[in-house]
Amino acid sequence: MDDTRRHIFRTIANYHMIEPGMRVIAGVSGGADSVCLLNVLEHYRREVPFGLLVVHVEHGLRGQESLADAVFVETLCKTMQIPCRVVHADVRGRMSREGHSCEEAGRVERYRIFEEVCRDWGAQRIAVAHNENDQAETVLWNLVRGSGLLGLGGIRPVQGKIIRPLLFTRREEIERYLREEGVSWRMDATNLGTDFTRNRIRLSVLPLMEQELNAQAGRHVAEAAGRLREAQEYIDRMTDAAAARCIDMRETSVCIRLEPFKKEESLIQKELLKRAIEKLCTHKLQGEICGTKDFGAVHLEMLMRLADMDCGKSCDLPNGIRAVREDGILRFERRYAVGMSGAAGEPDGLSSGEAWKLHTETVDFAGSPRPASSCERGEMDANASGSPGRPGSEQPPCAVRLPVPGQVICGGSRVTAELAANTPELKKQFLEEKKYTKWISYDTIKGNLLLRTRRTGDYLVVNAQGGTKKLKDYFIDRKIPRAMRDEILLLADGPHILWVIGYRISEDAKVTENTGQVLKVMCENAKETVII
Image (spheres, rainbow, N blue to C red):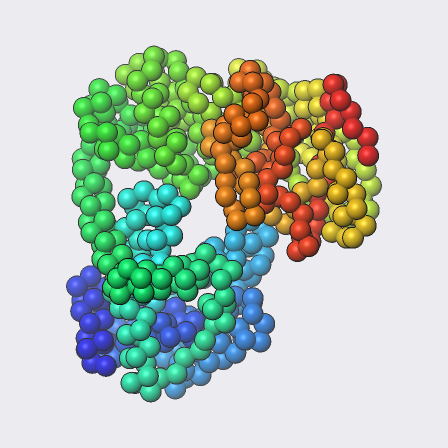
């Protein structure tokens, strides 16, 4: 018991997590990890005096069970004479507004609330209860989805105001400590299901590794994350020095000076490119502040190629960012405000990625029909956000609002969208699918629908297990001539292609018995008109 507590005390001291006189808020859910965190912090402040406030976030997802967790935490804090705030979060609302998964929406809401309470109470630290098992699960998840060195470094012990005193303590040690202390905790039934990816890693992948490969597999993964963090910190210091030589901040852009840039190692060059994008995204130079989540390895490779091209070449990146090769520099600028449609194409327009934005909203299916909106390249509906684009301007090719139900005409094709509840009668219709009419699960759409041509990074989900295939490979498999590939219209949700119009839909877009709402999309063009 004392060994576990002392081990956590050393972690707090080694990472300078809490200094005398600080104010610390602790996120306590009622589970074993957070109850252990609270118990240890209460003992620690007998040695190092500091203020402590508990915050419990009630997510509103598990009905009475969730409310009972809140009562448990309040009662525990009252017994320990520690002040407690219970905050009720609208996780479902965030899922609906922003298209987050349940896990992600809950995480965003928690940290938003922690930050608010931190400001209100004047706290310097936010203590959360991630443990060594959480670290191993995070690293494995980041590994399988292709994260770089930063992601493989896993969870940081200290990240700004956030501290994680239990990060080097295993879950088994935490539960043993609580039993020996005679402290009870709550069980969250959702942690025992396999609906969430992290749970599958926790319940299946890690136990199998520890049973079949090495009993210390989880600990070794977590230790490897620590070594990778050290490597990343060293690279960050080298990049800081290189950025002083290579990056210039200008009034409306960020520039990389290519002469010193090309003297750097390839690894540092890629870090500098990421740094330039981060600077543009986090400074309100033009339009709204954007994020860097949508940037990946494919975009870095495009930029590395662009740096070696002639002046005047350019490539378009996510979130309305353009990189332009100019005399002696690579300049990053914002083409248009975040939220507009736009391309992420190869340098010099090798893939134009023409896009028409389909703004969808959930409405009563009995709503009155709307007239079609006309949208040709270089034109924008006056009702759409932003200003009209012109050929050769720095506006997106096209962005037009499409009511649901509603229509949009793109070049020679009219695309019609209708929304309905999933009923047995409707199922009879979509079983008779035609080449240019598809029924799509509206529930699976995470962002804004785009009607566009192909872009780098596009993919389809091709089987029920979630397997994916690059759109390029799909075109090759179907023996679609290269000259035709840029002409095929796509219905896209980010890089996820829901429907290759005239061909197939993504497996994830298919209507199932669990689908709540169905989006019917019909395409008519000059060559072939489909009548339902």
